[in-house]
Image 1 (tube, rainbow, N blue to C red):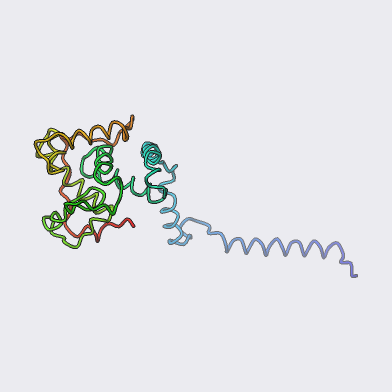
Image 2 (image 1 turned 90 degrees about the vertical axis):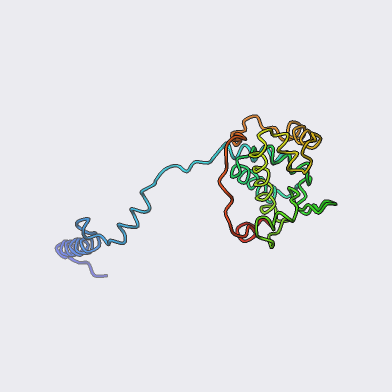
Length: 224
């Protein structure tokens, strides 16, 4: 084994330090203007909104509460949560109390998306097929839960606007205007099964919703 003299080690160390300095000088830009513009843009996009992501705890609490109530009838948790989120969304879109919408679905179809009445009403909210012709989309599938919710909530909103008295509006939805049997069933079911003590989703029946967008609902929505 060859032993180098002390002076050789010193020279070698000096050369290594010089080489590393040159490499670092080439690797690290001396000024911001030397940085790749694409990297600057990437950093701007990545850092402009650094903040803790918030979750809507009210919505999660509502979903958890309603999910427990619905678990016996809809055992599949994935479908159950998706359906409840759709109920909340469509109810809010139409300016309706989601607790009322749940009560209507409960009475109308017992949450059976394939429900068919002797009169021909279909789906969760038991919408009559002639409404598809009124809306102008005869291909819409009323057994699709989201389609049923969109139609049902829109129709109920229409009657809430036409008849400010919720009893008359619900009777009109059911085709029993002038009789209180159906509305009383809805109110009783809402009170017994679908109450929510912190219902921040509710909006007054006096508020108005935007007009439903044109185009086939079946093309826009799907919940299989």
